[in-house]
Image (cartoon, rainbow, N blue to C red; front, side, top):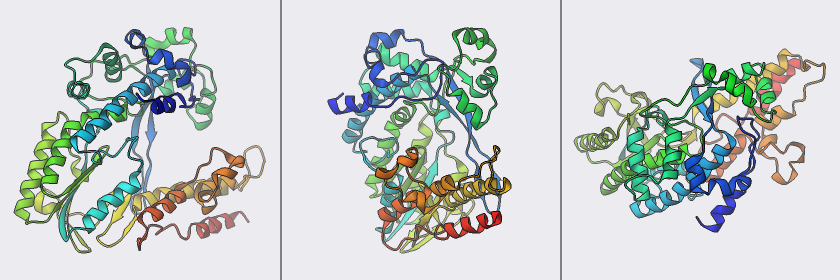
Length: 450
C-alpha cells in the first residue's frame, strides 16, 4: 500500500453512530488492523441490521414501498473491513488494467474520478456514434444476497494469486459470509426507545448501544447467530462493494472481450449493465444475445431480473424497444432507455421520471407537514422554512462551501445534482426538465399558511 493511500485511510473520520463497541477512528486502530495476527484472533461483533424504506412515487400508480435490508458493523470491525477493502481494491485496480477492463466495472472505484453522470454520458455518446446498433440493458436479481461464497472465495484467491486464502484474509472472509446480526428495532426496544427518527437519534448518542451485561442477558433471545449460509453478503459493509466487483472479475473480462471483438461497448455499474453492439441483422444479434446469456448462466447464482431486461434498436435519433423479438415471452416495452438515472429517447437526454417523482414526493411531504401544523412546531415556535429551501430549492443548490457556517451539514441537494448533470452533458439536452418551476410550486403550497 503506497504512502498516499495510507494517509487517506488514516484520515477517515470517526463514525458517530452507537454500536456494541466504543467509537474508534482508523488512525487510532491502525496498528491493530494492520497486524495480521490480531485479525486472525479477532472476535467480530454482530452486525446491526434494519430495513431501509426506498419509497417510490409514480403519478399514475401512487406510492410504492420497497424495503432493502442494510447492515452496519461495529467500529473496530468497520476499520478492519476498510483496511482489507483497500488492500483488495488496490490489487483489483491493477488486475482490471492487466485485463483491459478498467472502464467496465465502474461502480465503487476509487481510481476513475468519475460518477454515474459521466458513465451515463459515456454510454449514450457511444450509442449516438453508431449509425445503428442494438442495446441490451439489465440488472441482476438480489445481487449482494446472491453472491455464492464458494465462487467468491475462488475469485479472491485468483486475485491474490494463491490456492488458499491467507489466515487473516480468511478471518475477514469468514465473518463477512457467516455473520451474526441484531435487529435495530430490538435494540431500540431494549433501550426503551421508539423506532422513530427521534428514537434512533437518542440511541446513537449512547456510548455503546448495550452494556456488556445487557448484551449477555439478551443475546440468546434477540441475536441471530452466524448461519451456515452458502451465498450472500451484508449490503452496507465497508468491504461489500469491492467483494462484489471481485466476484464479477472473470465475468467482466469474458463479456468485455467478446463485446469488444464485436466492436461494441460493455459497462457494469454494480448490478446494472449495458451492452451496445453495432447492428448487423436480427439473426446475428439473437446469437450474440444468447452467447452473452451463456456467460451469465455460467456464474453461480447470478440471474437476470426479467422485468428489467430490455433490448432496443437504435438508428439515427430513433430508439425502438424490441423485447418481443429476442426474449422468450418478452413484452414490448417503452421506446426509451433508462440507465444510471437518465432517460434517452434516441434524441434527448433527461433525468429519469422516477427520480423527479421522488424529488417532488419528498418536497410535497415536507410542505404538507408544515401546512398541517399551520407553520407552528409542537412547542409553539414558528417553523422555519430554511431547511425546506436548503433541501429542495436553488437556494440550497447554490450554497458556496466556503460560506456554510450556518449549516455545515448541508452540501447541496437534488438541484445541485441537476446542475452537475447539465454541465457534464452540456449541449441541447433537457436535463432540467421538470425542475424549472419548483420555486413556483413551493410558493403556491406555502400560500395556504397565509
